[in-house]
Image (cartoon, rainbow, N blue to C red):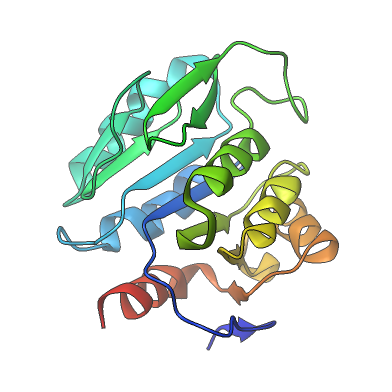
Length: 199
C-alpha cells in the first residue's frame, strides 16, 4: 500500500507526468515504463542523469520493452499522449506554455545537465494542477525544488519510497524538504498510476 502523506481535495484531470531519476535509474525506469499499457492517457517526460554516451541506449532499451513510444525530446516538438520523452544529454529540457519542448545550454544545476528541477519548474507553470511529478532513485538533491513548484501549482507529487530505491538520497531529500502526496515502493508505482488515471 502506498504511504499517503496528504491527499488533494479534488481529483483534477491530469495532462502530463514528469519523472526525475538519477543513480539507479535504469532499473527504476525498467520497472515502471514497460508496465504501462499502450493506451496510457498521459505523455511522460523524463530527466535522467546519465553519461552522454548512454542517451541513445536508454531510448532504445526502453522502446524495445515498452508498448509506449519512447523517443528523445526535441526542440519545438509537441507533447503527445502515448509517448515517453527522454531529455537529451547536454541540455536542460523545458516545457513551454504551449506544451512544446525547448532546450537550454545554461550551466549545470545541482551539478547536473539536464536538471530535474528545471524540467519540473517549467512543467508546473505549463500544466499547473494537471501535472504529476515523480522523483525516483538518485544520489543528489536534484528535483526537490521542482517538486515544490509542482505543489505550488496544486499538481500531484509522488516519490519513490527511499527503502525501495537503489540510491535513497534524492527521494529522501524530496520527502524531507517539501510536501509529498504519495510515497510509493518501486514495485507499486506503475499500478498506482494505472489505477489513478485509468480506473
